[in-house]
Length: 210
Image (cartoon, rainbow, N blue to C red; front, side, top):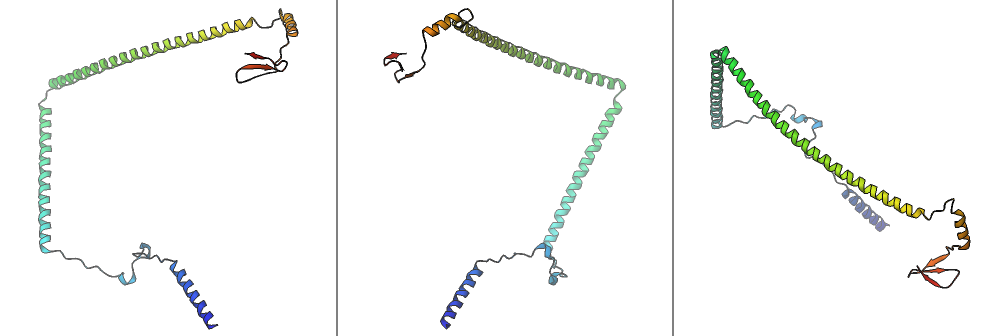
C-alpha cells in the first residue's frame, strides 16, 4: 500500500508539474499608464542635471549670432520694401493724366491683340474640327449605304429563292392534281442510312445511293 501511495503521489506531482508548464505567465515590461504614479515616487522631485560651463557659453554665443543675423535680415528686407514703396509713389506722382491715358490705351491695344490672336487660333481649331467631323460623317454615310446595299441584295436573293420554291407550292388550282399524285405515288419515310450514305427501305432489300 505504501508503494502504491508513493507511486500515485509521484504521478500526481508529475501531472501538476506538466499542468503548470502548460501555462505561461505574461508580465508587463513597464507599468500600465492607467495605474498612475506609485506612492513611493509620488512626491519625488527629479534632480536637474547641471550643464558644463563651456557648453553654456557656446550656446549663448550661437544664440547671439543667430539673433544678430536675423535682425540684419529683417532690417535689410524692411529697407527694400521702403525703397520699393518710394519708387512706386514717385512714379505715380510723376505720371500726368495724359501719360496715364496713353498707358491705358496701350494696355487696351495689347489686350485687343491678344484677343485677336486667341480668336484666330480658336477659329482655326474649330475649322479643323468641323472638317474632321464632316469627313467622319461622310465615311459613316458611305458605310451605311454599303450595308443597305448588302441587305437589299440579301433580301432580293431570299425573294428569288422563295419565288423558285413557290412553283412547287400547292394552291387551289393544283390541289386536286397534288392529291391524285399523292394517291398514285405514296411516299414512305420508313428508311435508314448507313455510313456510306446508302438508303435502305423496309419494303425492299435493294440499296439505293442518295
